[in-house]
Length: 180
Image (cartoon, rainbow, N blue to C red; front, side, top):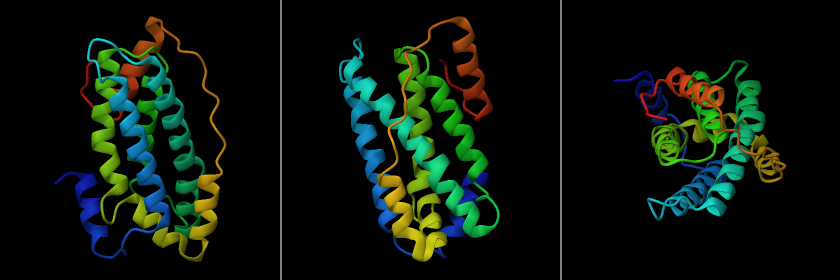
């Protein structure tokens, strides 16, 4: 069993049913998944408008987790969640892939990472459930912070060999063997 699998198995049985934070963030995953699917609904033609919405939304979602959710869990526990480094590697790889203009291999890599990443957060006993449990009476306040999180400034794409190499390294560092 992988470290992620062991982590989820150890925490699944002790956490309650999903709450407001879980529903809010998992709903955002669904919205982002739909945008990403719209991006590639025609395999030979990337929908630039859908991708732009997906890109801005994913950057905001990652910021909500990195700036609100994970710090709140760390504050409640006194230490970071054990799975936090894994999430941060995935977040870094995803952000790096959002820098260059989208191509079929880049979109495929993003999809593959999200397919592995989202269950770590969403599955019963996953990160969202753990954070909700840790939040306790603060859950409503954390939910409001997530809901009111500002949009993230999205910079233009950068297409050069350095950016592509940086993206490849971030993907590899996160443990993925994906062509970018």
